[in-house]
Length: 93
Image 1 (spheres, one colour):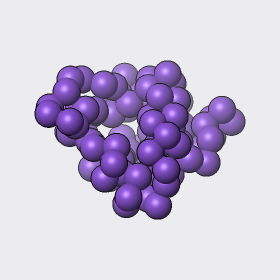
Image 2: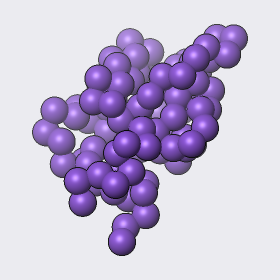
Image 3: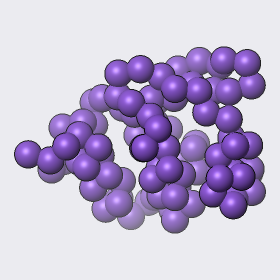
Image 4: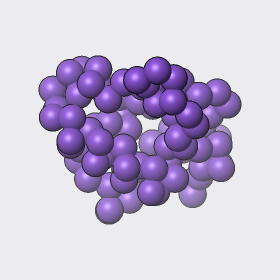
């Protein structure tokens, strides 16, 4: 059986509606985020780390939220807390 992150990665990488930008954001965030607890994310730090414009990062995050891959939890100062969707752990493997 594949590790939960591997199953989620397969789900994301095979979805034809996921843009390259969203895939880059997911790949970066999947190393930081967890299924069971929210982690704060600053879009400006994410944009800097990936060499992307903030509007592109924002659009990618919105797509990942629409696909219910990322779950928005709350705000923590300027950061938004996200976690990976545990409902997708079992994925479509």
